[in-house]
Picture 1 (cartoon, protein in one colour):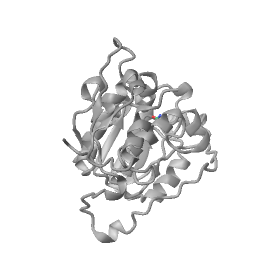
Picture 2 (cartoon, rainbow, N blue to C red):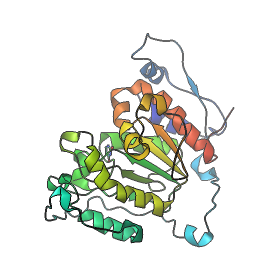
Picture 3 (cartoon, protein in one colour):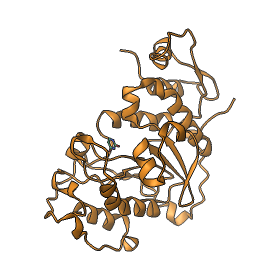
Length: 282
Ligand code: URA
């Protein structure tokens, strides 16, 4: 089987002396780019980034706050709380602005604000470094995430992890969350009313984590966080959310179906890496 595009990037970056040199992708990967086009003899080049160890992130946060920046060990699986189901219009009054991350998570674990709570096995609150500079936002939990109570742990999640690693970050260094915390049936997109019920959790997560950059994965976070449609047009273009820099790009599940789009996604991610001093421009 041909190597995944992001595997190759990671391999190249990890190879001795990879720093500052140009990486040639294998023919197989190059062909993957063009699988929906005419076969092309062109082997794309991609820029090489600095290894993770040499990362120099400009960090403007106070030292005190930074000391807390320990990656959080996430359990493989979380217990399954079984809340009483309330009717949708009986949303609990919660002052989200008063909640710290832990209390916010506890509140989410018992949430019955929308009907998605009825079918869930686990609330997928989000995970990662509570002081992350980089935050990824997806749509909502799928089958695997609902089972494990963790975001992006299925096939799309494996690809997201590779994308994060290719960006010279570890999963533990970043924070990963979703628009909705409970699985929509059949993996359909969240409905506007479900997203509306759930967004106060995400907004508060962003407020507390204060990342420097949000990466929006696909059309759903673009729609519900920025009120924009058209991921094809918007990807790769910087946006703002409450003063934060936002980069919309393709969802990893889309990339699994359309591997050729990994090339554009990598370009989007490299823009993010540039901000962190990780991308090397020729
Ligand atoms: N897709 C998402 O958008 N989020 C997940 O957590 C998993 C798959």
